[in-house]
Image (cartoon, rainbow, N blue to C red; front, top):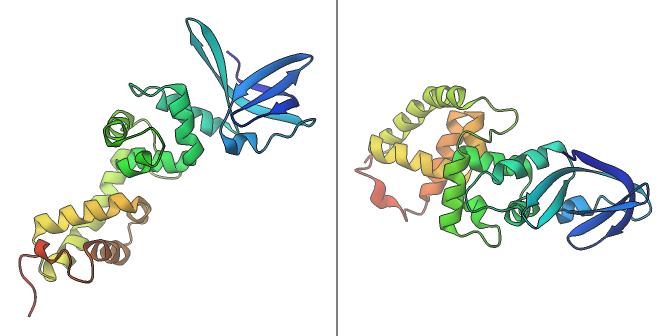
Length: 213
């Protein structure tokens, strides 16, 4: 397995680069971000993943090991090939992909050209548990943390007139759009985020079961 390439950069194109390894030119496909770090005539290094097919062997290059790891996990999703996985990394940083997979955020993936709602849903479903944001607790610990703040937020919303069911559902939907808020576990911030999502102009007032007079 070829883990990385280090040598003189001989060529940088729109989607590929060629690295000279003692007279042998190795071509790698990479994201625009990775390619922007390579400069012709200078030494360059890329972490690599070799994709072997019946009629070809193709190298894909990455700026660091984290990008490569996310790329290879994306390949485990049925229907996602190397070009589409690379497109995801061209649009999103690895950490953003980890957060989206961890929180079930389909919208992040639909922002990638070539990925519609159906494929995005499959990506989120099949990546569940495989990608965890760096610096966050594992799924079990995350669930425990949620258990500590969610009842407080639900209680605050029921005091404002929402039912427990609608309050809980609204919290989940609001934090799906802003998953980083749930990681912090700050009750006032989560409440504000949820109320903002519901809309201060009353557009979603139908979710209420009553209001305080």
